[in-house]
Length: 86
Image 1 (cartoon, helix red, strand yellow):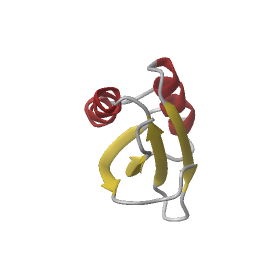
Image 2 (tube, helix red, strand yellow):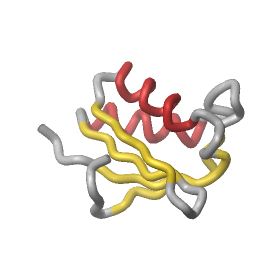
Image 3 (spheres, one colour):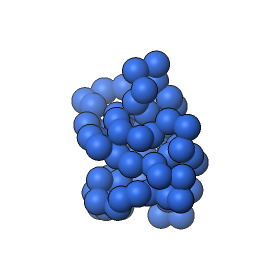
Image 4 (cartoon, one colour):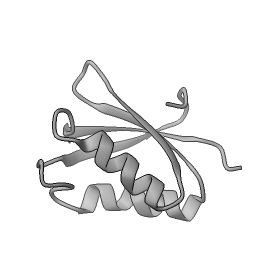
């Protein structure tokens, strides 16, 4: 199994169904995923699975505007070097 990868996003990502949209997109691609809201207004998420598939999903998160009908929008995405799987 590939090691987990950790990310943090900011933008319009809380109160707009971002986590649910993200997790559904990950699961539909065969990835394991988890996400949590942070007090800063950001969302932290973990992805586990095929490297190319993870890269494709991460790329889509920053290209599709908005991500859902609630207006979820990623303004900035940062990959973290370490974290706790969510």
